[in-house]
Image (cartoon, rainbow, N blue to C red; front, side, top):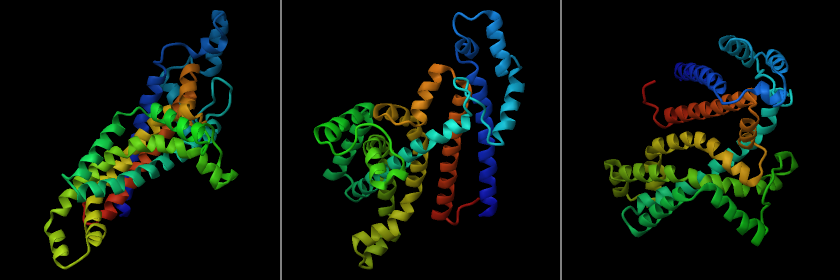
Length: 313
């Protein structure tokens, strides 16, 4: 397991290095000049050149990347071009919001997909299976911003059970924290539950036809014990894999959901950053998001090893 983990960590480091190079290069291909944006539209060429020199934008791209990478390895992601605040501090304020939303949305996705996938597999080709398939198809076709607005109308305005917008940290109390995340988490989690539901249904349906399941049934085990103790673990590998892959989609979907519910997370920060052409902050957002996705994939790899202990490293 140690060798396996070491290989995965090295692979994750390579992925982060490649993403950092691509992100750094692409960021400077964005139309517009940050120096002009900061100096003002009516600034002279000398003033713009002075801003470029101050920000180091007059140096070759390779030199700028190596300087940035050296700082990033020490936790220094640079300084915002907009307000001269360290990027690491900006992300530290925003990251807990997005991570809280992603974890809550994933919990909603699991709470939806696990029972629906099991029920669809146990009742495959029946009426319940067709209903679940229709519901998942409808969930895929529903835009997240529309679902979020409908939830606000239903549970924040018509029935004022949850707050419509805003975020409260966990330090303010579990109840308040959960109340502000409830509607955004459901909005994001519904779409994230679709593919895990389908994968679990397909995998569990195959396992339920296996010989060892028929043997377990012949021994007189209750259906719940057959599914829970024997079938579900064998069908869990593709399900856990898809759950891990949904992490990237959750971070991508957070841009829209955070805007709808007014959450001060990485999603809304990315939207503001692109408008301001604040390249250091944009690079920091991409790198931090990549770290989260890579960490989630590493966790999936470890879960896969636990579920299939005989798998090759």
